[in-house]
Length: 231
Image (cartoon, rainbow, N blue to C red; front, side, top):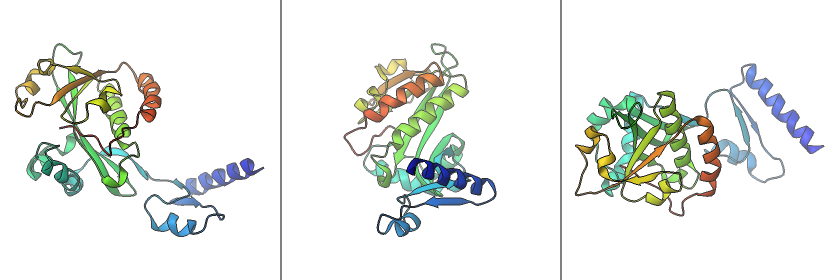
């Protein structure tokens, strides 16, 4: 019986949202403080049905520049990310993507396309990944990677590569294979920092169904570390 009641709640919530209500919150009356937690914390503890995007990945825009800086600066100071001045971020804003939850930008990455005759339609670099400490261990890295791979496929590109100094196992667990720096597209190899000596990993994806199947395994391969990092 409770299953039918729960389904009724969900259907009523969908109907309300379809008729102009912005959000519907379903909160258990059996948990003390659940209403306060649901309304006064970012993640809450109930179920929310929302008309607009509550959380997910989207294209960055010029209004996100400061949020990107705030995400990247701590990692740049630790030497995990290559330093990017604000002017460069502004110039390249169309290459950035952000993970947003309830209006807050909490993670980001950058995609740059490189021509290379060795790879059909070239290859995309996934770089500048930064995740807020508040979201670490929540699988946001998986969400960013999935979005990146699917975005590449929509552009007719099957190859994605990363350069990393600290997260080799994370990418290997997700099907990336180590390659020598010479495997990089010529334009990228020309800027390769041999002193920093990041490892190069490539991944080839045929279609979105392939990604769907792999995502199940990614969830099981959550990293023991609190975060992962690439250039």
